Length: 124
Image 1 (cartoon, one colour):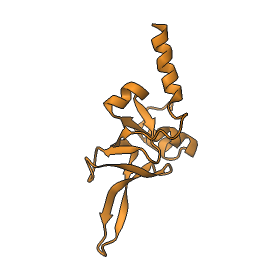
Image 2 (spheres, helix red, strand yellow):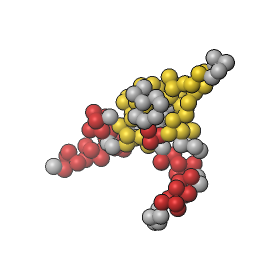
Image 3 (cartoon, rainbow, N blue to C red):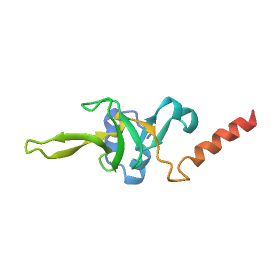
């Protein structure tokens, strides 16, 4: 985005199409994973995350659902108990999560970043 106005930044992020919101759905990675994969990675179903902010701070769980339209994630274990005793999943914003263990079922997920790192090592 070319503008620096916070109001316009928030509006464009909120009204962005899904293919752009998908690029915004990245979360920080733990220090060990940063050395291997890079700074941030896109959140996917099955990733193990640590909640860094909010009522569930410190909770570790797996991502069950990612809502790109609202930039929210549903994590296993982050549930509220209603008055009737039933449990409801509490949505958590993507920026409040830290990826601990990404799913490796997709063989192409981190290929691009690894190629760039190996090129840098070879050129030295």
